[in-house]
Image (cartoon, rainbow, N blue to C red; front, side):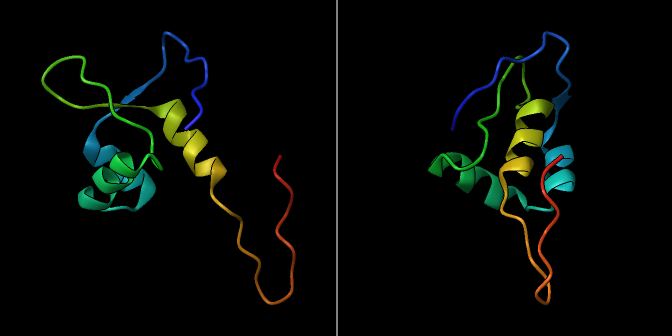
Length: 76
């Protein structure tokens, strides 16, 4: 997964926050990290955390869905 330059003030997200944002369960997140298809966490202390910018980039990389012949709006 390609890395972006991260701001020194990038928000850190805990696993429960990442689960809520992505609607993925814990096991799916860890499996995707192992497979290299999801951003890897950091460990600045006792807890694992994710950079919000990397989670946002991952969400932005997901394919768009088309409904009933309507084309998805282009990315802004």
